[in-house]
Image (tube, rainbow, N blue to C red; front, top):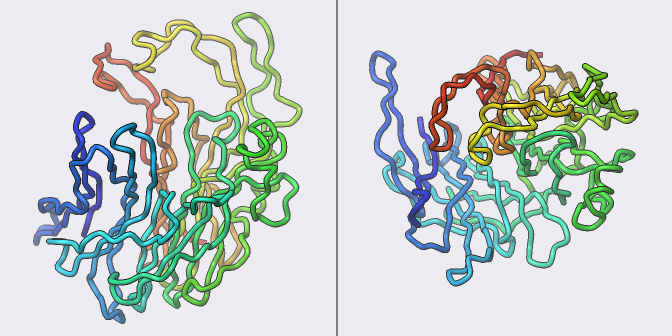
Length: 420
C-alpha cells in the first residue's frame, strides 16, 4: 500500500511531494514506513501541489509494481511573487518507493495546469489527465499524455475536450474546480469525467462563450447556464475521444426542489421560494471501473433549495472562528446537495446520500469536493465517499484559536456502497 501527500511548512519555503509505503503484519496491522521525497525544493518561487499516485498491479504488464506520481509545480516570480506557470510533472519508482526517477515535465506547451490524475492500463500503459491551457488559448481543456515504456517517455498532449470552468454553484458556500477524474476498464477503454458550465438549453456539451464568466460576465452565466458533470471515452488508447455526454441526464434536466418555504425573518419580512429555483447542478465527478467492465461515476447534485438563516452577529474572532453566532439574521436561499452514483453500463443512477448536505453548516467556503471519490471492489460493488456536513462535533480549537467548547456542524467523510 502506498500513500502520496505533500510536505510543507506554512512559515518556510521548503516543500515536497512525499510517498510512504505501508505494510501489513501477520495480525493485519498496518505499519507505515518513512516518506520518500519527490521534487523537494527550498525555492521561494516553487510550490508542489495536487499530487496523485497510481501503482501498476497488472500481471499482464511489463512494468508490474511500478509506482507513478503526478503533480503540479507552481512557479512564481522570485522578485514579485507573480504567477508564471504551473506545469504537470511525473516521476516513477521501480523499487517499491525507496527512490523515484528525476521529475519530468509531461505537458509540452500546456503549462498553465492543475489537477492531474495518473492511472495505469492493463497492458502497462500509463495515462495522465489534467486541466490546463496553452498560452494563447481562450478556454482550458482536459488534456492527456501517455507512456508505453514505464514512464521514461511521453506522447505529446492530446486535448480530450475544451472546458468552461464552472462558477461556484448558485446559492452555495464553497469553492469549485473543473479538474478531471479518470479510470480504465479491463479491456482498455478510457473514461474521463469533469464539470463544465453548460447552457440551460444545451443539447451538446462543448464550450459556449455565453457560459464563460470572463467573456459574458457572472450575471449572464447565472441566468443562462449551469454546472454539469460530463464524461468522454476513448477506445483507442486515448488517440480520439467521444463528444462529451452528461453523467446524470435526468438530474441535469430538472429544476431544484424548493423545501421549507416560506420563512419568516427576524424583521418580520417573508422569504418565499423564488419563481425560478434554478437548474440542478452536478459537479465534482469521480470515475471507477469494475472488474466486470461496468463503469460507475459519481458527483454532487445541488437539487434542493431551502431557506438558510444567516448570522447577523458572529462570535469573535469574526474572521477566524466562524464557530457560533450571537444573533441570527434574515434568511437567504441555500442550495443543499445530494451525492449521486450512476452506472453508465445500464444507464441507472441513484442518490446514495441519506440526507441533504448543507455547505453553510459551520463552513468557511473551502474544500468540499476535493475529497470525494468512488471505487469498485473485486466483487463489483461500488464504494462512494464524499464530504458531508450533517454530523455534530464539539470544537475547542479552530485555526489556532481556543474556544469555549462549542457544538457545531463541520465536515465529515461519508460513505455508501452498492451495486446496480
